[in-house]
Amino acid sequence: MTLNLYVLDTETTGLQGAPIDSVVEIGIARVDIDRCKVYPEWTRIINAPLTEQQKKEAWVFNNTDLTPDDCLSSPHFTGNVADELNMIYSGEPFTAYNREFDFDKFLNKDPWNFHAGYLPCLMETTRQCLNVTGRWLKAQESYDILCPDNPAQ
Image 1 (cartoon, rainbow, N blue to C red):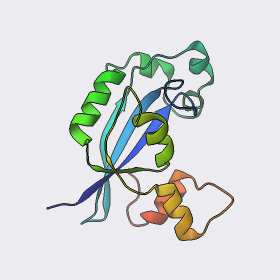
Image 2 (cartoon, one colour):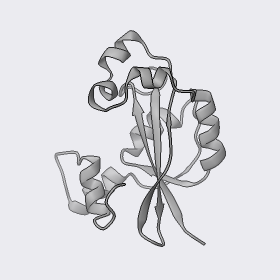
Image 3 (tube, helix red, strand yellow):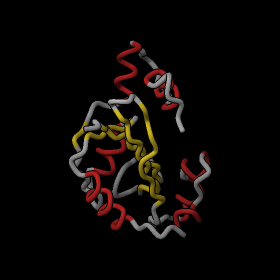
Image 4 (cartoon, rainbow, N blue to C red):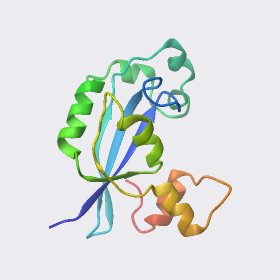
C-alpha cells in the first residue's frame, strides 16, 4: 500500500480571506512517501465572481500568467469545485506551504467547507528546520530544501 500525502496551493483575489476574496485556482500535488517523489495531482481554475478592482489589482493577475479572462471563461464554478474537492479528498492528509492562509482563510469556510486531515505547515516546518527568523522563505526555496532530489515538475 502506497502512503500519500497532499500539498495544496490556492491562488486568490486577495489576502483578507472569504467572503471578501475568492479562490481562483487550486492545485494539489501528491507526495508518495514510499518513493519520496512529488507528482502533480489535480488542478482547477475557478470561475469565481470578480469585481472590477480585483480584475485590475489582484496580485495573482499581475504576478502570474493567470488572467481574469481565464477565470471568467472557466467551466469550473466554485460550488462544483468545492463538491469535487470534498468528494475526492475529504479526510486525506493535507498541508500547504502556508496552511493557515489556504485553509483557515478560505477552504475551511463557506462555500468550501473542506475537511482534511491537516499536517504541519510546510513554511513553518522549513523555517524551524533551518532556524530561520526574520524572513519568510519562498515556496520554491522551501521545496528545494525539502526535496533536493525531486525537482518540481
